[in-house]
Length: 113
Image (cartoon, rainbow, N blue to C red; front, top):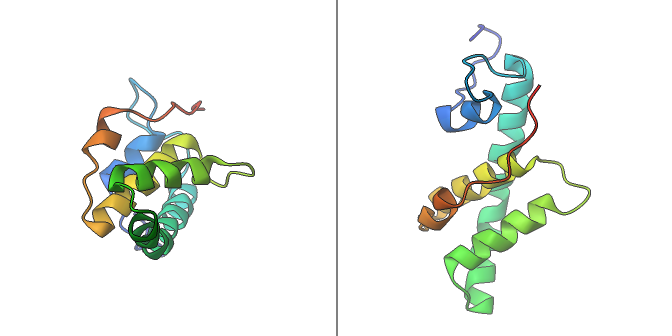
């Protein structure tokens, strides 16, 4: 990583951009860092909303995460399906909610360059 960009990109995020059978990401480091910042910000911004949904609606954490994923994918979507899945997994981590169900059902594959 260059000196001008000191953002740590977790492997769970960078693997979203590595096509099957390849080792090099399909997008550049700068674009990946920008996408990561967007997704991390979305996960952090959704923490209060998700906690309130779970409390006020009396639904399970898994259902809240599923609803958040659907919301992220609604048009006009600002994240891809795989990024949306990463955001809700990260949201689950931030809230200490179980994400086993999400990890067992993979997100729709994005076309890779």
